[in-house]
Image 1 (cartoon, rainbow, N blue to C red):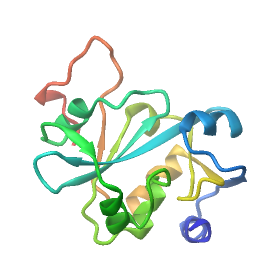
Image 2: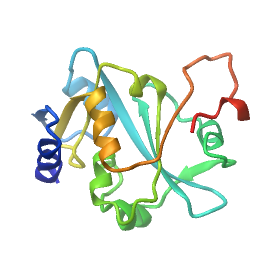
Image 3: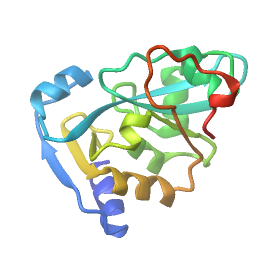
Length: 174
C-alpha cells in the first residue's frame, strides 16, 4: 500500500516526506516515534450511523476525543458507532489500526464521506500512515486538500473548537 500511496501523490505532483519507523498502533505512540514540527498528528476513525448502513471516515487531531453524537449531528445522524472489522475490510480493504484517508485509494465505490476536524483542515501540515503502521507520510494541509479533492469526496469540516459551544443544526458545515 505504501507504493500505491506514493505513486498517487507523485501523480498529483504532491510533495511528501516518507518516514519509516517501527510499527506503531496508537496515535500517542506515533507522536513519540515520529515527531514533525508544525505538523498535526491525526487519528482516523471508520464509523457508521447507528440507524443506517451509512459509513464515514472521521479525521481528528490525535488529542481530541471523538464525540460520536456531535460528529454524527454534522451529517444529520443521531449517533455513530465504530464499523466492524469485516465492513472496514469490505469497504476500504484495510484492517483496524491501519485506517487513514489514504485508504480511500482502495474504496469500493465512492460513497464514504470524510469528516475532518477544523484544526486538521486548517493546520500547516498533516501526517498519516499509508495504511501501513511502519511508515508515515507527511504532506502540507493544502496538499491534503488536493488529495481529497482528487477523489471527489464529500467533505464535512467540524466547526472551530469551542468547549462552551454545543453543536446546533445551524452549525452544520456541509
